[in-house]
Image (cartoon, rainbow, N blue to C red; front, side, top):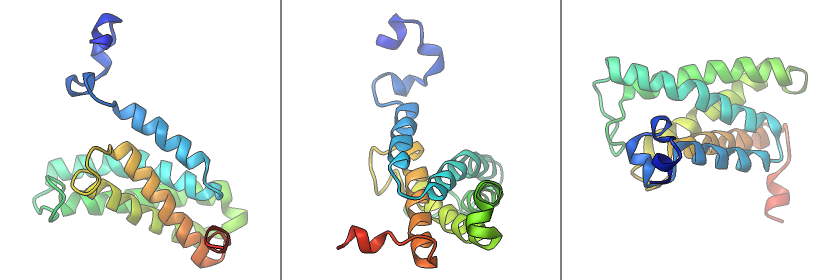
Amino acid sequence: AVFKAIGMQKIFHPEEWTKVTSWTWYVTSLLVLCMLPYLPAAYAGLVVLGFGDPAAGVVGRRWGSTLVPGAGRKTFEGAIAFMLVGWAASTAVLAACFGREIGLSGAILLSAAAAFGGCVGELYHVSVWKGIDDNFSVPVMAALTALLMANGAGFISILPRLFS
């Protein structure tokens, strides 16, 4: 009702008039990513959402035929597109922005982890995390997975501090 009163109904989907909007979830994810102790993981989360999510939508709608169990209308074809495009885009960004720190192999490794984590966030945000929008689940899951991979690969040492 508020959106209609101030003339903003055209920028929101009708179902968003009475619930938390996608951009609210996105901004909330940005706040979470800002708190991460490792900037490449945050970048990876954002890039995976920005490139992998649209690729999954296009491929899934156009060529998707094999449903992922427990993921509603999500398809394997869309999931593969999500991971490949998210991985490639994230690798390019991490190599360009953090290449001196982590190298190309580090960018490839962290991006693969982020693409996988983001894909899990995309596939199961409806069935597992009911009420959580993919604009939150994808970048946060992608970034946390990249953060864990960065720790495992020795780029950072965050887990001992978290659990000590």
